[in-house]
Amino acid sequence: MTFTVRVMSPIRPGMPVKVINPDDIYYGFEGQVQKLIDGMVAVIFTGGNWIKLVSFKPKDLEVLEKTKGKRS
Image (cartoon, rainbow, N blue to C red; front, side, top):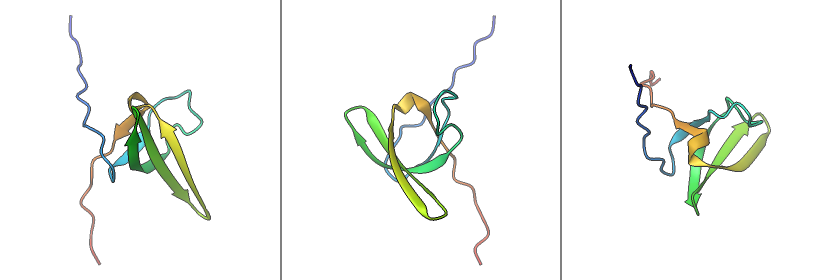
């Protein structure tokens, strides 16, 4: 029998995150952590001409790894 253990990074303000709960209307959206209050995580999403701040349970989020990009 094999078990897979997923180690979660601690969530901190400024970190990029992705919503991983398929039952959430924001599933698949990526945003930035703004604050942590009472066990909830406030994430800000921006797109086009809108900005939205939404609260999630930490289990519904996945921390995205920073990728090295080209600087121009």
